[in-house]
Length: 467
Ligand code: FAD
Image (cartoon, rainbow, N blue to C red):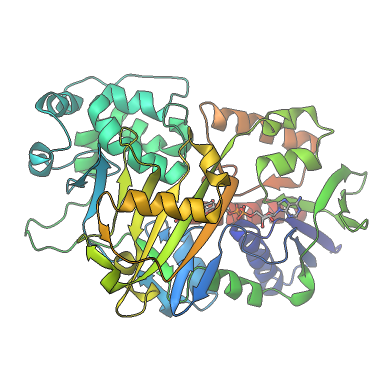
């Protein structure tokens, strides 16, 4: 069999997954295959970055992944890290609405109520707001052929109050975007399916989600996982599993040219790398820059990504006079706060914080407050402390802080995202056979979604080269 060469562009979790599984397949099936992973930065992991300081484990980017989507746990097993997995602490979470903290009504899933009691007694909504949400049970499903915004969909089903005080803060926490712009079919297509099948989100969720035991003491289940030494362990484990000569850091792919035989990749050091197949695990804008000679990539040039920053602050426990018994809160847009969320990391992830200390991690950067990310570290710390002190009583300065800025890093799957991607990938199949897109910029931003896409790209490449 002829020897083949695959180049993976981008060494975030997606590219790493693809490189790892491709090399594994080549080894196990004795395929004549070389794999090269090319990363612009001086380290692998992309958005995954763990900082260890004075006994604290601080995540600059993602802090965990959903356990339910199995690919991340599977990958951890692959690289021998299963025994390092830790579940999140399952304390009370809160929503800050108009300056007041409210308990997240128990039994709500992504803000959609599934239990009557906690919802009826919640002070998050007026009686009219509750009645409007209950209409979801009788309001007929609406068949919508085209994509629609998350905001429109949820407002139609549950009314404005539930959206503004519960759903919006939760969803915009995940996507750092405007739910009235974000696409339903690219973010939560299952909610549309539930509506169509059960005629109601509440009924649909009650039928399909495992119900918790009735006992008031029944413990909430942990939905998230991380690693004892931070998410960086997964990156390090994957890197250790790759053959050293297959990884090239500090090298950017500037341009890709299709040749009669495969592809030529022009690299930032002036050299040319040849490939029979290419996996692009980089943001949309980077794909467009590398392949700008193809008109059909043009929509990627305009693709939007929002910016956020987070500030992790380490305190001595004695600095917090009025603590809150919980794992954190998200902030509704109608609150006069600049932070959008705060995690009591020492409670959500007790392993991250030494005994007797407290670790708070807060986000800033609403879609309409993007410039906040450009403020200095001191200004950001000041904003965060002022906002926190509206609900807590912090009496001492943090022992240290870690500020992380993520500029244009949160891809926005706006209405029509999936259709646009389908069209571009259809064009690629004819004009760029053997080139595949994978990663957070395309079909899911969560770490397991990125890992799934890395795995799918491996299958495409193997089918293309060897079937
Ligand atoms: P990236 O990690 O962006 O990697 C792409 C890589 O490509 C980068 O290393 C970049 O340097 C490289 N590159 C770019 N252009 C080129 C080029 N021309 N040549 C060579 N290399 C290039 N997800 C969760 O599941 N849980 C969370 O808690 C969570 N929290 C998040 C918090 C923040 C602040 C952010 C920003 C994201 C969060 N996410 C979370 C989302 C998740 O982290 C990302 O979707 C995921 O890490 C993206 O991985 P990726 O490999 O697709 O891309």
